[in-house]
Length: 284
Ligand code: FAD
Image 1 (cartoon, rainbow, N blue to C red):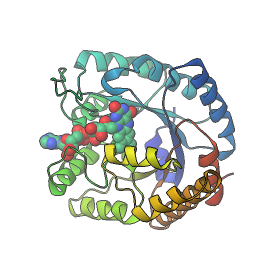
Image 2: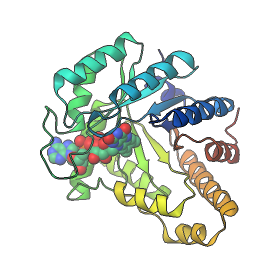
Image 3: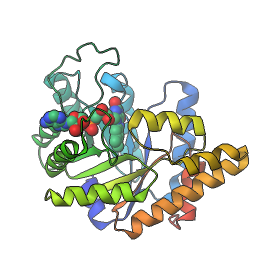
Image 4: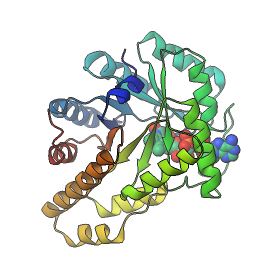
């Protein structure tokens, strides 16, 4: 199976993130989306993993299915906080046997009620090391937060930990952001720490202003007030056009500045991902 790290070296790549659906309707919607995205000739897709392993089997089944049936690799998100070493080793063994060799190694979030997470892990770097121990046929990605991880006390220490984690991984994927400068500033900060591991920017072309504001707050991303105001003032039909234009402009600036590809948070829907790709001339 193709290692995504090798695809990035030939980039630029185009990829999307899916989440494992909970219902039959959601599964049907995702199956349609996967078909509708075929014309994009995607480099790879990634599949999220519910907090504390809550979607463990659904994530696993979707990743294995996409990886086997589609012409691109599927990358399994995997979180470690709250899990034991034996549990994660068993899941990695299953992925290895099933031909899935691309993993996004994440810490995940501790329980929201403040109760102890339990398990054997605290930081994503420990999971990177667990995946690495399986051998070089695995490609390991990690998360990057250009605007500071929400739990970090300060930017400098966050960048230090990010540089250390990226040095152990093959590439990074960012949390979504709306201003290209925050991405390039992060790369500069990493460069100053001797880290040149490629980092894929993540784009969130979402046209529901309440949804974006909520997700931005949760993930520590700032949502530009000017863009928010334009989306808010527009009617339903115009909102999508504004969001697509903004995402395409951001995507072009990132690619022009040397980003190794674009990762789209498509929320299991195709229209906006297709429109952004068209605006960027990326449909093959
Ligand atoms: P880490 O890299 O471990 O960092 C977490 C915090 O700890 C940071 O503040 C960091 O600065 C700090 N830190 C790191 N190392 C040290 C150290 N040695 N000492 C002190 N502090 C340290 N969550 C899910 O549950 N499922 C998903 O599928 C999922 N997918 C994601 C995909 C992407 C692209 C991104 C950006 C995030 C995703 N998340 C997902 C969210 C992620 O799990 C949370 O942001 C989580 O809080 C941190 O994960 P991390 O891997 O960045 O953690």
